[in-house]
Image (tube, rainbow over all chains, first blue to last red; front, side, top):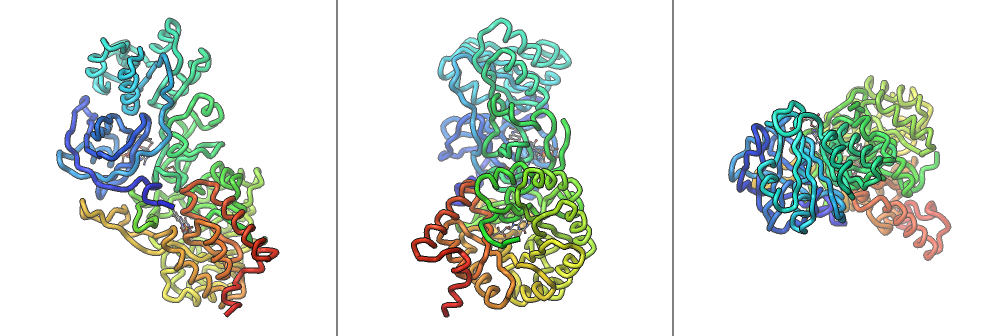
Length: 272
Length: 290
Ligand SMILES: Cc1cc2nc3c(=O)[nH]c(=O)nc-3n(C[C@H](O)[C@H](O)[C@H](O)COP(=O)(O)OP(=O)(O)OC[C@H]3O[C@@H](n4cnc5c(N)ncnc54)[C@H](O)[C@@H]3O)c2cc1C
Ligand SMILES: Cc1cc2nc3c(=O)[nH]c(=O)nc-3n(C[C@H](O)[C@H](O)[C@H](O)COP(=O)(O)O)c2cc1C
Ligand code: FES
């Protein structure tokens, strides 16, 4: 039994670059030349004296790895305040990635959920697949990767932006934009990550249109590798860290807690 | 209840009924729940696990939703007919009695008293024969299901502790919990675990667990439930030969939930080839042979 590799080979890496994505969110970059990665996978990231948390990989190219973080609590605030050359601990990558076998993808990111979708978009752009990308946020200040996506627009990317308050793009939820896309285009798979109520709404739309669905779920994670059980789903006992975070529409059909509740750090149920 | 077979050890995965059912369906004869206390408890900050010298270090810190919230999970286990042992802890005798009282309404096969977590404030109980005796006796006095005492290898004399538990009426002892240890990151030059120190489990502690089971088995007349580093059927056979009637498996679930089936099959082939009719023929055989 190789516990070292099963627990993600804990190691420290040095931050080589920090990019300001919007008013609050930052992407930190480090080098990890031996890492292998599939879009949808995540790392457990340790900030000394604070905590260790799961973060999706939002950039991966030639040994350069990026994580995009929204500061909401102690660990995420500590990460966005790190500086060039600071060290962080990482384990992983972990998790079951997106199934990228798709001729006509629709990619829908809500808020910080856009982070794990960036490598998915990158994958399709490299293949030359025509894709539709919908990026939504509450307000303009929370949109992610907009300039980068706008630059890709010529390369077969159709971009739709929505904000709840109308400060950029269409005013309203991403679901509204998605309804329009589904009514006028032939979509094979809907890829998504974002707030769970949003993903539930999209899942229903995908079922109605009989298209495939791939969503990345978020649950409290302590170990990231199938030991602690905090991320187990009802009633199947699937572990989000090992069996997910990406689940298909068919799998989600069996997950009764999807869209209804999750468990907090102690294991107590919390409704969405 | 019969103390036999291959069980899920406490604290690995066992925080919801759904995952415990999945483990039972994958071949665990009994599942032991995460240790449950009276109040919800967040546990230590992360990292709560790391690795050293082929072993796992953990400092989860007894994260649990509290017995009240956990009752829903136990009720499901009951409904689904999953054989479970409930692990409980308390930092005072009053505390553990309160948890035990609540637990009884859900009718577990047995209560396992965690007297021995090496990285929480309860760690002292199983270092002291008198405290061990008092905790076990207090719970025995109020419940009518079997009570197991889980012991720590960090005690200076585990056999004294085991004898105290037996005297207090324990129906079995579970040996061992994790071995106190730590890890330092040489790049950041700080301890890795959020709690600084933690408990070592997995293959590196197997010889320690084996020694404890061997010594306890010779000294006590109640059954010993062996746990610590068992990952293969050969380990399980050794553990039985040292004196374990049943075996719990923890860290090895990392490799996949089929570990229970693999070990069970290997042990039964061994018994057949060596001409034994059941596991009980080899329990403690190594010291009986001396
Ligand atoms: C697979 C996965 C990928 C993620 N990817 C990203 C990402 O790319 N970028 C990003 O900004 N965020 C991501 N998150 C969310 C991120 O892990 C949480 O926002 C972070 O843990 C909050 O920690 P905190 O200490 O800053 O806040 P806290 O104040 O501790 O917590 C705020 C809230 O965050 C959630 N949370 C806290 N700790 C955890 C934990 N260990 N596991 C899961 N949720 C937790 C809880 O819902 C909590 O109520 C991801 C989560 C998961 C499960
Ligand atoms: C992540 C983790 C959490 C644990 N939590 C508990 C617990 O809550 N209660 C308990 O009695 N033992 C707990 N243990 C100890 C195990 O039950 C077991 O005694 C120990 O890990 C040795 O067995 P193993 O080497 O097969 O893992 C935990 C161990 C690990 C690795
Ligand atoms: S985070 Fe520990 S099992 Fe998934």
